[in-house]
Amino acid sequence: MDSAVLQQMLDEAFDHAVVHHGYTNYMRDYEVIVYATAAPDTGIQPAYLRYLFRYCVEARCETSVPAVTWKVSLDDRLVDYETGADLDGYVWGVKWHLLYPGAKLMPESEVARRWSRAVGIDFHDVLIESNAHRLTLVFSDLQVTEVPTGYTPFVTD
Image (cartoon, rainbow, N blue to C red; front, side, top):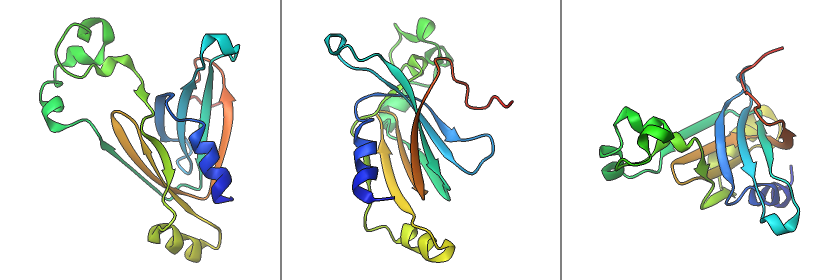
């Protein structure tokens, strides 16, 4: 996959809402579900987009929420918006994270080069940052498709 095309696909998710991320139910590919919206006057309808990072050989997720915020965000009432909205702390119950500062390709990645040599196909390393998580994914291909409202990643046929 061409790096410029890949970066453009990643740029299109900038500043939208991440509503889910994790390995697919068959555990090979990693998906990031983004709720994309535009200003109402554009006429562009909101959509749920599935960013499918195919052949994902490495996925790391770490918090980007500072420890001082975590310290005041341990109350279980914060995992539900209605019970946590008026409390101090990070309200986990909003059930989405802002994709900001966004996603970027890491072009000088030794781990991607190592996997490319070992498997015989191109691999890429991407850093995806939201206001709550930092994801690092090493993968070979990216597919972006629209999914229906209410899409549940772990439902099988």
